[in-house]
Length: 358
Image 1 (cartoon, rainbow, N blue to C red):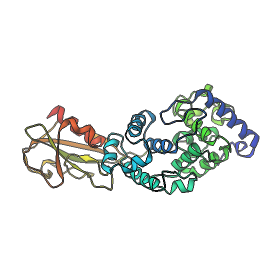
Image 2 (tube, rainbow, N blue to C red; image 1 turned 30 degrees about the vertical axis):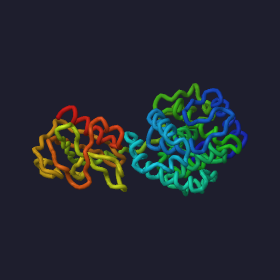
Image 3 (cartoon, rainbow, N blue to C red; image 1 turned 180 degrees about the vertical axis):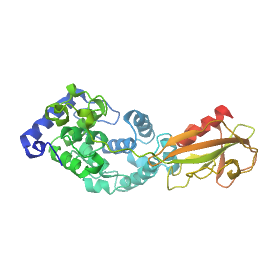
Image 4 (cartoon, helix red, strand yellow; image 1 turned 30 degrees about the horizontal axis):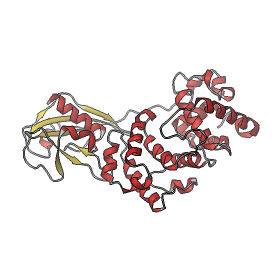
């Protein structure tokens, strides 16, 4: 399954690859807000927080949230004292809101342990919201343990390195084994971060900068002249579409009705406009009959869309005047508070759409 077996069988070759990679990183490492400066031991709280925020998103998207979290909750104990709603509000716009609940639960568990994070991968993986990749990353980066985190960037590097003929999703065990074989006894955290930086800066999905890569000498995909052919791809399946409607009910002072989603499930605990369920097909003629409150609804032209992991969503927006208290669970929100109370991305789009066109 793994073509470039010499990387696994020859310790001298593995050591040389690691040495070149670390030399490159010492000269070219990215400066990121959560990274310790050279020569200083990383703070486990910063490493953990950054890895959680980086799940399902990018460094440019996560960095502002990290800085907000550190300013508001400078220690894990302070984070543990926050309310779940506070964390949901700070996550607004970043998506994947289950992280907020897990972040809070994990902070409480760590705080109960005197604020100390475990160093072992298995102990880290037992914490709420900490999966195998995150556990390995924290263990290696924060504690210098010989661990081998494998995210999408690192998997791409390794697949190219050995010209892996299977798609990564079908060869995860082989990729993980290769990563563990390469992980050094010393500076394991630096090596892991070096691979992260190579994946972000050099070994990109398209137009990789192979001439600048410290792994070039050993990269079988580069040697074949086909780096972009790896990782091997699987045929992407079209996402099913779901549809629904939301209702922008406004009173005379400009406030509109909102509600909070249930504490479990998709977009858990985020704030949303009242609306219908999301179904595979529309109701036929009009969504207005399914509104959770009676009003003179008018359909706003266009729609708002969002892509989720397993489906895409198309929401129709209706607007109407409303002066009563609204259904149970609803509350009034002024437009200038939208960014502060935890609307999800799709609901922010719906609110903006309504404000612009209603």
